[in-house]
Image (tube, rainbow, N blue to C red):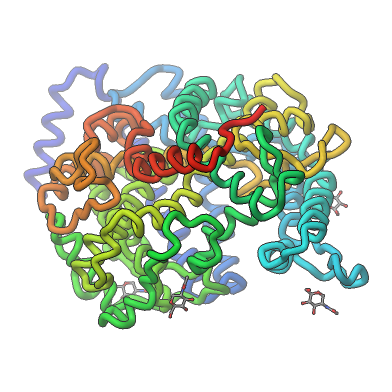
Length: 612
Ligand SMILES: *[C@@H]1O[C@H](CO)[C@@H](O)[C@H](O)[C@H]1NC(C)=O
Ligand SMILES: *[C@@H]1O[C@H](CO)[C@@H](O)[C@H](O)[C@H]1NC(C)=O
Ligand SMILES: *[C@@H]1O[C@H](CO)[C@@H](O)[C@H](O)[C@H]1NC(C)=O
Ligand SMILES: *[C@@H]1O[C@H](CO)[C@@H](O)[C@H](O)[C@H]1NC(C)=O
């Protein structure tokens, strides 16, 4: 200890004073320490919330106290921050730490506007959550929530008028009802951007990506253009299925398909329905594997067993084996429903412990989720050498892409066969693989354009190209990018934009798009370097690639993860995949067998591709 101190003092003494400013150094040491302590309080409160259920008053109160403390601390930093930036003090890492100090966000607004922006945001998400629709079949029964009741009715219904009725009501109650609030909110958002030092609000929208609005949109445009050929073929095929089900009048040739019917159809893929539910599964006879059933049959019948099997998997990649106390201290979560029941890792900034909480369900989704949770754990540990301000992932959901890459690799029939989960040889054959790619493709390929439109619309509003409530502009974007149209023409009398909120009112979707695309890019990279993927080699297709026991992966993965956010994401990517930008090639390679099949089928069945 004494020795270290001497060295530090010595180094500080000999370095020219321009490159280290002692007040800045002290400021950052202090900020990193204080923030770490406050972040830990936030994490502990969130963990309590997870363990006690989402309505636990004590946990909610603790979260509020920690948030308040964080805000007050950040406010106390702002004057110093401005000074250090103005004087351009510090070396590259110090400047980066200053950049990564969280901004005040809405708290930069004055008291009245601040109260208003919170009221608007919570009103809008409440309206989405609390709105009640009247039942189509019992107009006096007005107790139906959007989720789960209306969603469930629409998914099961075979009555087109009923489906259409709910589509209209949903939009009337969530979209039109909040039009004025949406407009007011966007105005306050622009003001917030200004006050946080972003003259162009679209740049503020994407600030967590550390890219400006124009740069982000041009990256997203490139990804959409790359996806387009696959999307068009898939769209044509789904439109053909919808036409078979509903007839030429409702699903005409050469036109976008009706959104309300397409959503029900594509929604099936998210519900993991049985093979018989799909109208045009590529190979009806081959069916879909049911991993849940096999988990129970093959001795992976408890979460503990799954935990250790997956831990073995990561050790096989050359990562350190997890300590047994992680499992012995693990606790069960108190989830309200299956959709909020997941395995999670809780990382602390100062406390020298890691907590693991798990969902006791044992099905395919939880099995795959284990790969993601443990991947998070390695990420947290690898990045823990960075100062607090540089420890997070380079943009939101970046770490998800890594976890999803491994859970994707775990769905390879070669790996599942190795585990004894799939026994029949047919799962390795093209017919069954096409079925799997088809269902997975419905989930991925159709969602990306929807996310794109959500961000694109907001960016057009924030940059002043369109009015905040330009419903016609919204439908032009929706038709062009998603190939879906409203059941009947919509005008500016209506407002459908807020009806499609999937997450927060004020958060960008670009990082979800980037994270999704990146997971395939990463898979392609690892499968290429382990010689399991070969372009145009059907025996080395990406969906067959099994990464288990590829020991060389661990070291380079650790190096990339250890960077945290000490450098921009393109530098992390360079380390991770050997290229500085996110691209769509991995996703296209993964779905290549499906794409080829779609092209062939569309020709055979004389299906029209594209729309006008
Ligand atoms: C929030 O919703 C309530 C009830 O719908 C309404 O009275 C109130 O004006 C709304 N608040 C804002 C800020 O729009
Ligand atoms: C109202 O409709 C819902 C969904 O169809 C149903 O579950 C509920 O029992 C109905 N309530 C009454 C009072 O009929
Ligand atoms: C898979 O098997 C589980 C357990 O037997 C069952 O509950 C579930 O419905 C099956 N899923 C499908 C899509 O067949
Ligand atoms: C968190 O982990 C520590 C030790 O690693 C353990 O003592 C504690 O019980 C765990 N807490 C929770 C809530 O899981």
